[in-house]
Length: 504
Ligand code: CA
Image (cartoon, rainbow, N blue to C red; front, side, top):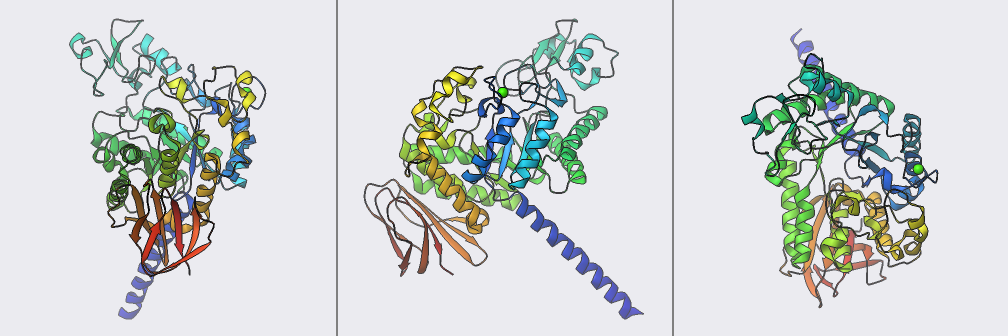
């Protein structure tokens, strides 16, 4: 009797253990390590000749993206909206008519799936547009059921409260009634009231709608501004995430938690991933000051810190996005640009490329200038309706494709290396002990596999110590050799970029 009881307990424990293992593996293979690509649909590819990018244009570009090595897309807002950028939604269940229809989105999902490309869409729920029917009704009739979806006050004193963002005033005068409404970013974007249970349910329904359509997850806009305190934000995202996982256990939530590492860190416990703003800053600052050695230390420390918080968390390194000046305008130098690309695209986690970054597109604020149309070809300028293009059309894709040493081909090579080498996707990262300030040197380890990434901006040779043995050269911008043997010392040439993997 006792024996049978013990074996039943043992079997039960084994079942639980095997169940846990399967779950972790599923998560790892589905999102972790992929290279994602951020798309501003309006600016990407126009399929019908009206001069405005659209969803069919994205579908038409899947071969390009697959060839580039991309395994995931983040679509910036695609829902109905009165603005050109779409971060103020008027209907969460419909697609911006300039971009297409729900049918077009379904087709994109199906075609992307055939190429193993995940699709994540922007979910903008911290606020709606002031033209959203909910807000129109709430702001005009106090008895509306939507009144409590937003935050109103008649208190003059309260309306003069300082913004938690530091600048501007978060309270905006209602043009219809003697009162103020809360709109942290801008009067056209009234904040939603997450204390309202009905609203929370409504927002979950929207998530369900897109998950059932086949969307793989959501990029959560303004994730740290739901409330003005971290605890309440975490509580909401935990609730939202567990709901999303009920619908699809493989769906991912990637937060925009724009903060320093300490501010971002708590969110690693409730979200699957977030953009690690500080990593891009560390890379760009390090390159600006030519302290590449320091970059390795900082990146590996940040990565470890987030993994310690939650081993299943997937950091998303990136250089710049639609809210920041483009990399070219930050670094102003093509060698540093290439160095930045190699460094972040060979990091663990899920790196995000901002469309056009692979061409070296430039642009600095105002925002429209960092969101210019993707330069497929030189003649694009005449065919774009919503904005004039100020980028130099000589960098167009058609001009870079066949040039072996182009920035585009570097991106393509590195992304595909990452795709084909698990150690570059999933390996731990450790900065190598070395004292050359102008050399980035990190070691990646995954199971039995080991790789090293070196980026030198030094004008002379630099010697570094690595594990002795035979290595395959995965990439070098200088030599044609396919492999190298070392007794433990490796000489990098001046301005060399070198990626090697230990031979089996
Ligand atoms: Ca179009």
